[in-house]
Amino acid sequence: MKHKNHLSTKSYFINRFGKLSTSFLFYQMQDIAWEHARILGFGFDKLKEDQQFWVLSRLLVKIKRRPDWGEDFTLETWSRGADRFFGYRDFYFVDKKGNNIIEATTSWLVLDLKSKRIVNLTEFENFPKYEESVFGKNAGKVKAPKSDNPLHFTPVLFNEIDINQHFNTGRYIERVIDSYDFEFHEKYELAEFEVNFLKEGMPTDRLAVKKQFVDEKNHICSVVRESDGIDLIRARLVWIER
Image (tube, rainbow, N blue to C red; front, side):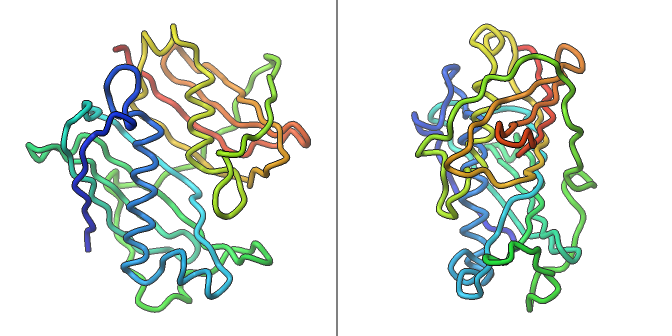
């Protein structure tokens, strides 16, 4: 069963180029995912009753075109079922002509609130049957970036913490995007990104972005925690010229 939201690209959704920003692209996906999970009976409040919660583990997004400021579009999502521990969910951003302008696949885990252990999703009754992704594959593992450049660590900010008292997944993406200067963004825009969410960030953490330039347009990044040097997320980015 597909779930759809008909949206308009608001002024606070856009970047400085008048297009849907990467962070709001993600937040809209996150919001409709929570909404549809609730409809299916696996939402935040239902899991909270059993001392459980959803976490996003992997994400793959391919952008053909970003909606313009004021443009109407439809965001579609559906659950693709599970293979024991991963629950899969895909997305289409569809323009008024019926074109899929953005496509995405995501992989989610359910964790026990106290033990933080992964819950086997076969324990959930009436969970949707497993189906193939829009890409014919699920989001994969991203390698750790290799770089000897010095890292600039900054503290976690109040607005970066979510309702589970962890670093918000969308804020990781914002940190990575904001680590590039204005000159780079003037020349390139993000066309594809694959993210692995590995560890929980906490309010007391200090974080930095590490980058490896595989070539001019293919980069690998991570958000690193200062206290133990661990990557909290890893991201593969594909840029194209504007």
